[in-house]
Length: 93
Image (cartoon, rainbow, N blue to C red; front, side):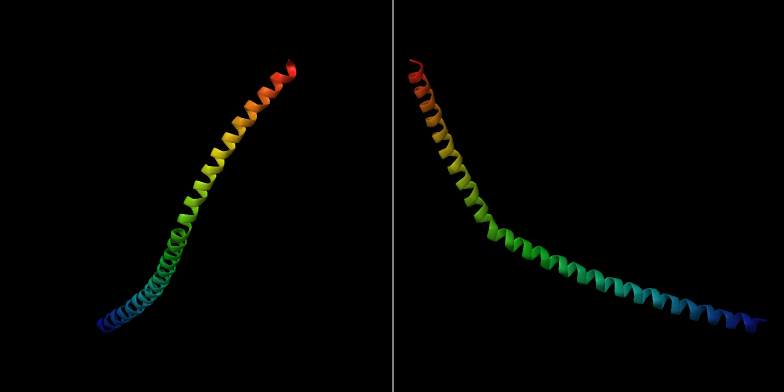
């Protein structure tokens, strides 16, 4: 009877060892995949940062140009509006 219990004990330990080894190898695979994914994300993040650094001065220049155009249009609009009022008043008289 004890011999059977001893052999069952060895079999259980063997199965447990094999099972833990399988889990460990799956965890290692998952860890490698996560590390590769993290490296890809980091690489993309750096590329995005560099791209934004290149575009930043361009965006500031565009904002400056838009402000200049807005100022010019508002001046022209005011002149045109006042000119239209003057000509409308002349035609009424």
